Amino acid sequence: MATKQPLQRSSRAEIHDPRLTDFLNLALQRMQHVINPAEMEPQPIIFPLAESMRWNYFTQDDWDEFGNLESEYGRLSYTLTRYPERGPPASCERILHQLLEEDSVLDEWLNVAPELETLAMAALHDVCRQQLNGYSKRECMTKSDYATLPADYTIGEDGSELTLKLWHRALEEVALRLMSGSLEHVEQFLQIHAFLKDPIYGFQRPLKDQAKLFEQLLRGLKETMPTDSLNAEAFKRLVAQGAQESAFLTSPLLARVSLIHFAAHHQLTYASVPLDSLARAEFSVPSHVLEVVEEMMLAVASNEGFACPIVPILATTRPVFSKKGEYLTPIIDGNHRATAALLLRFLAGQPLLADGVTMGQHLLGYCIDHGLGRKWQIDLSDVLKDLYTEKYGRLRDQLTSQSPLLRKFATVQHIPALIVQEEDFHTICKQRSVGKSRPVLLHPFHQTLFNDDELPFALPQKAGQTHGRPEVFRLLPLTPFGTSQDVSGREVFKATVRESMNGLADESATMHGRRFRKFVIATQLPLKG
Image 1: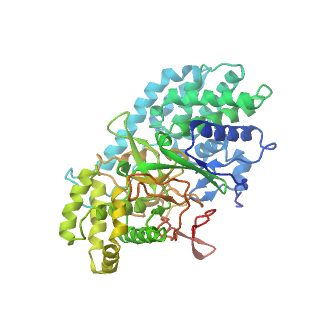
Image 2: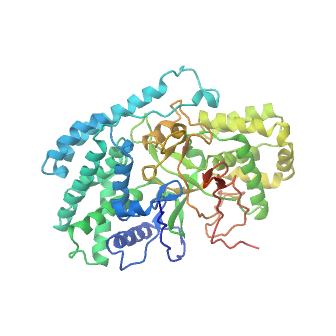
Image 3: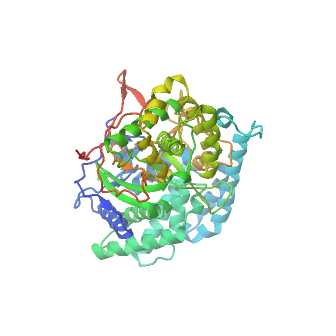
């Protein structure tokens, strides 16, 4: 089937230290384009909202069936239709049937939402018990102790039909009410939208904050274009997009954003995320981490010790399983880069590269001092053991001879990250997709279970999950680097971007009987010197 490539976007200057008004203006432009596509050029899209899965795009047949698949109206309809396994637990179907029999789903939503949330959390705890089945309750000491096959809750036969009906009923009702000037049921609509995208944790979204942003977007839209002449169908597309935009704007990580970069069809929102705050769902491959370590040292040398530019990781926020109201910051893509940065910071704090046993003892104290959990301790320890094998003698010598550059990693506190939302992805479960006619997806709740350090779950290295990543990126530095001051995101850095740094090693595939590897480089980046 023919793939429909995203339309070319006009080049834009990146935005440094953006404010809320910058984000609102970009969101408004996308909302305007959704209802006036013929009168406006296409707007940059937040990653991964133009991709169907990984770095693949939708087919022309998909567009013919669902309409604009760069809009939330089309994309969510696609997800609910094509991937019924992303729907709510079967235990919720009775209530959804009853809800859809009511004259108004928005009027009735607050009456059924508490029971839906209770059933959803019960299903989550049942999944957790399934994954704990056979767990010995002893302390996990190795990566294999954490290895867990993701479990799912049961999906009902009518799930896809019910969720689609709920989506379109909610859109129709809220559109008609907003057209008449009523904002009375905005929160109910936003919670239905959140529930459909994440049936377990959608209830825990900051709805009041999101509703304020949603209403602010609507007011801004009315100030920039006439909306009185819009018909109900156009208004449905408008409010669907508003729900998506306002959901993204509630991400806690946006408070740390330093740069909005535009490339290809993407709006790439980069933040400096505290390195010690990161949670991980899967372990790394030590040899791959050490490749990245070597490349980071080369990047520092290329920039005369001024900075260590890297391909940003992808990060999101997810609720903590055992503590309601608290959030994790999972790595969605970039485990090897994060592990390499933590290892280099550890090595930079040692007076000299001592023997492997002594360094292993020091590593435990380092992890405790920085609040790094058991999975981080095991992962870093395995990489450190490999570093002290004969195979990596040359790398150890390089680190010793370049100790002035290595010492600069001692001050690093933040890692650059592209901010994303897990519920926007069609995340592939690699373990369960082998031999299947189509990929098996993970739920957004799996990121909570596998990233929570209080739970003994982890995905295997390079064989657990895959999200995809944008085909273009902006090199950004670890900060602070050798100083107490952060490096400005306005700087342009020099680095050789290899497959291992970008995390693309082993992401090969077969097409027309030939093996190929998708490899991208940093674009639109003039190098210094």
